[in-house]
Length: 283
Image 1 (cartoon, rainbow, N blue to C red):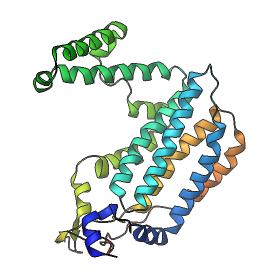
Image 2 (tube, rainbow, N blue to C red):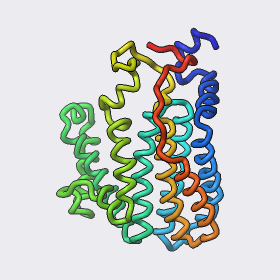
Image 3 (cartoon, rainbow, N blue to C red):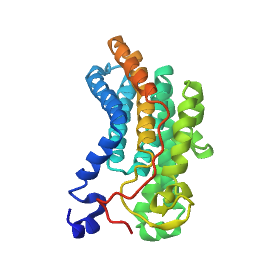
Image 4 (cartoon, rainbow, N blue to C red):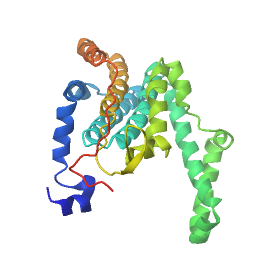
C-alpha cells in the first residue's frame, strides 16, 4: 500500500478493503450470523405491502426499511473498523425498532408521531426566532414566515408549546417488552459511541498493559466489532418479528427463530486488544 495515499486518505483510502478482509477473517462467526439475518430480512422486505387504507401498515413497512438500512449501515461501518460510528447507528436503530413495535401494538401511535413531528418543527423554528444572530441574518419577510409557521402549529396543535418530546423511547420500550433492548444496547452505545465521552475518546489512545499511554492512533478499531455486530443483530430481530406478526407472514417465523438461536450460540461477545491496523497511519 502506498504510505502517502494512506496518510492522506485514511478511511477513505481505496485500499481499505485490505482491512475489511482482515476483520472478516478475524471474526467469521459473527459476520456469518449477521449475513444470514440480513439475507432473511431482505427476503421479507417485498412481503411488506401496506394496504392503502392502513396507516399502521404503512408506518411499519417504512420503519422496517429504516431499521434494515441502519443494520446494513452498522455492518458496513463495523467491517471497516469504524465501530464507534457503527454503534452510533445501532443506537438510532434501537429507537426505530422500539417505535415499530409500539405501532404494531397500538395503531394510534401514528397520532403521536404526528404530534412529535409538529413539536420538533416548532422547536426548530422557535430556536431560530429566539437567536439574535439568526434573526440578524434573516430578511423581515423570512422572519415573518417563521413566526407565521409557529402560529399555525400553535393553532392546530396547541399542546406542543407546553410539552417535552412526546415520544419517550424508554417508556415505549417498557410498554412493548423491549426494555431489555433499551438497557442492553441503547444505553451502552449512548455512552461509548454516540456521545462525546471518555469511552469514545479512548479509541484514539494507544496504551500498554499498565494503562500507560504510548501514543495516539487513527485507524480501524476492532476492540468490540463482535459486540457491535451482536447489538445490531439483537436490534433488527425484534423489528423483523413484529413486522411478520402485523403483516401475517408466519412462513418466516421458523427461519427467524433459527437466526436467533445461532446468535445466542455465539455467546458473550469477546473483547479484543485494540492494536493499530498497519493499513493506516497512526498519529
